[in-house]
Length: 305
Image 1 (cartoon, rainbow, N blue to C red):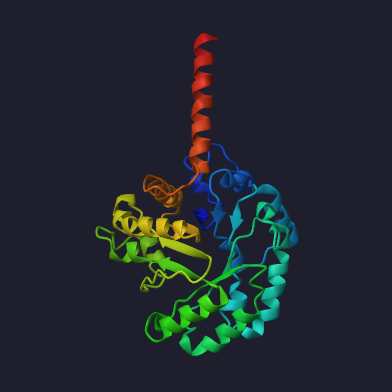
Image 2 (image 1 turned 135 degrees about the vertical axis):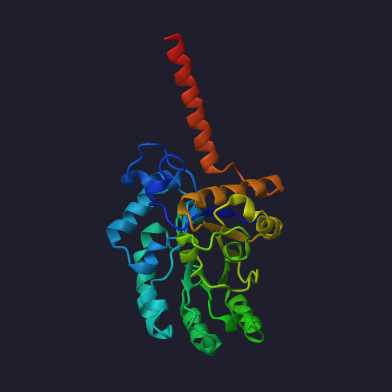
């Protein structure tokens, strides 16, 4: 059975999407619903900074359609305080707050994708035992989890192999962060403050290893869509291969100019379709077609009214 493909951005509440990704005149209170009409997943970056209350989680669950996936980050209050094991119980309580999204529910009722823990650059291979103990105590059958490492030591041998073996043995995913487009691409203005801000993301090697039944890709795109094509040429066949092998893929598009992130996700989706991946029409395209037909019908009525 082919894997499922989920795509989206890091956030849904971005006012500059109004007029392009969202219709003109959209209000902030409509952003979550409109996002769910267009994309199939969201990274859930908000939970990294603060834990949502029960009322907020209930609203998320009620607003988003079946099949949509939230992929929240574990709060930095757990991941960025040194060792992880002291925060095992607190992280489990955090997971319990997400229950309304469908933790442990049947796939048709579930709106919760894999959670992921983003480790700081200070958390290196010397903490392997701590990472192993934390992950071993995570309820992985109930709620899949992935790990993003940012210390350069994890990318060098023998630590790279040891990490992948640990994750594979536990069925834990590896978050694949690709920052190459914002570091390697030509014609990037050095004084662009948004590029400079995004370049605070670590410049790390890309090791596209799948360690679980799913994988999470965080693609940091160049604002100029055309400059991303060499990287798309790598990612599209790789994603097709993983999907054909039954791996579920979560692809999240980031951009220093956030207004352009949805277009990046859409472009990758279209290129996967062109490459033969058995994907349904992107929700965004379906909505756009419906709006175009409605506008055409309205125009015809006004001409003959």
